[in-house]
Image 1 (cartoon, helix red, strand yellow):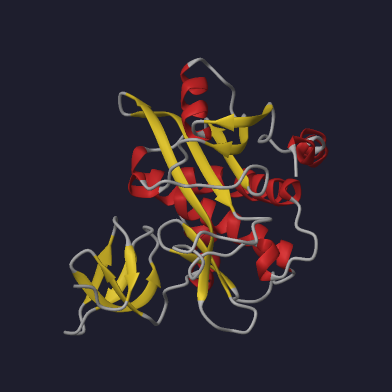
Image 2 (cartoon, rainbow, N blue to C red):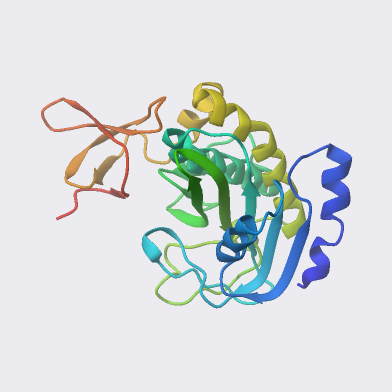
Length: 271
């Protein structure tokens, strides 16, 4: 797969009337598409600009973890948003991006109406094995922002979706998957990108302005952790979903409801 995969994206986003997806820059190699987007934002790049890399030399996810991808196989993209947004609502945009990616992956798999594709709080997308077994990671999201005083100047949504990869390193093989491995007949990186841009264009302005209310039902249905024993930080309990503030809710052993606003969640009791 090559950069020509994306040649028709700008025309399609124009046809759909989207504010995202133009200009679109496709590079053979980048250190990190998020880094490119942040530098370009400082230089005045417009809302909706998109950077794609065929491979990244210093790709990263949350907590500074490396994100590696064979050249040309997957969707590595960063999208610049200049959407007015109170800083307090920035964490919600990771969930919105997770929903957008979840819906794009489900569409590619023909599973839009099922619960096979889920969002793992706060920013991963998982797919259950076709046989109904374990959930594996297919995508990750990293949202970064720049502030000017108390105002959000720019938001960069970095997304990595495994599309064509069929062989993962041994340390990832048991917990990672791709559209090709999950059963998509002819996965298209361009189609996945356009679906993500369409959802972000629709949902980000509403959530930035008014919070999660209009996507909350979808988010609750898509939550990968609901009903499972989860540990987040020093709290363990049964997950009861995600609240309107974007917090993970856990019912602990004493029956008390604990709301987790940041960090990571792990299945089971940890420690």
